[in-house]
Image (cartoon, rainbow, N blue to C red; front, side):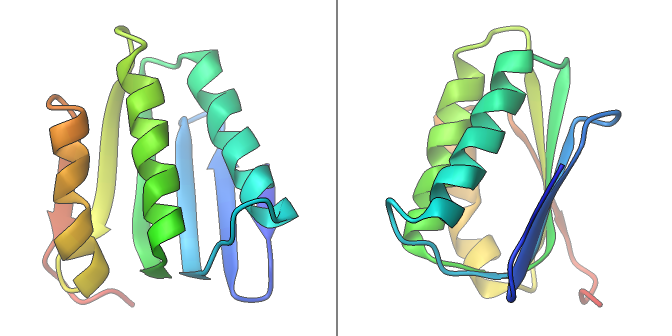
Length: 120
């Protein structure tokens, strides 16, 4: 499944239970794009795969509403005791370095993989 707009793409690879975010996402509440991403993430959480991976390595920007969306998703997954979460990101992308560590506060067993090599 794929959600694609001019500046970003969100792709779900069901066989690997991986959601890949790419580009620059500036979400606004109530917009169809926002609601579509929320619906996709809720659907993934409800399917309860053993491990869900969020690959943010190619996501250059995410506004505060998008960060809130990810936080709510992590809380939703945390409630499902049988699901582990992995977040892949880059330490060299400023918003990721600052914001993603907070996800571990929401879900202490979340595995945060911050790569230190420059994203391509």
